Amino acid sequence: MTPELIETSSGMDKLLEQLNNESIIAVDTEFFRETTYFPKLALIQIATDSIVACIDPLAFDAREALKTLFLNSKITKIFHSCSQDLEVLFYYLGQAPNAIYDTQIANALLTDHHQISYAALVENELGKRLDKSQTRTNWLQRPLTAKQIQYAGDDVFYLYKLQHILDEKLHQLGRKTWFDEDSAKIIDQ
Image (cartoon, rainbow, N blue to C red; front, top):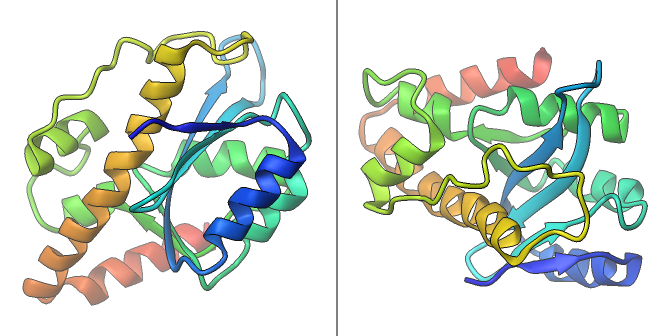
């Protein structure tokens, strides 16, 4: 799926309207931290089963719109290994998102792979090999290339699919309550 690049407040308003009735969204971030004390947010990716959007917070002030979305406890936000994403979003928004679903934690409750990478999890569960060529790209440089946008969109698109698979497995093994307890600890921290 080709990601939509959101670079304006009006584009963000349209995206929020589309996401208004969603109960689950996948989220990822791209940021820069090599020469800064705090990470600098460069891109926020969001996906559902029919939407993949890359929000450019350097093109417009997306804070209030993102607060509306990320602080809505009725919408579960799916991340993979969420600690860095939550940190960068906390610095950008002044608050951390709530209602978190971390696919790395879900996988750890299902397998012996407690620190599995996102690319390995996608390959194991979906049989899809991700292009990781943009991992170390300069996410603050503008304009973003088509390859950067596609890379960022793929990261969040497959994340949405993973959540459904992992959640079903947690239910089947009777470990969903364990997962819910671990997820609550993330938010408390």
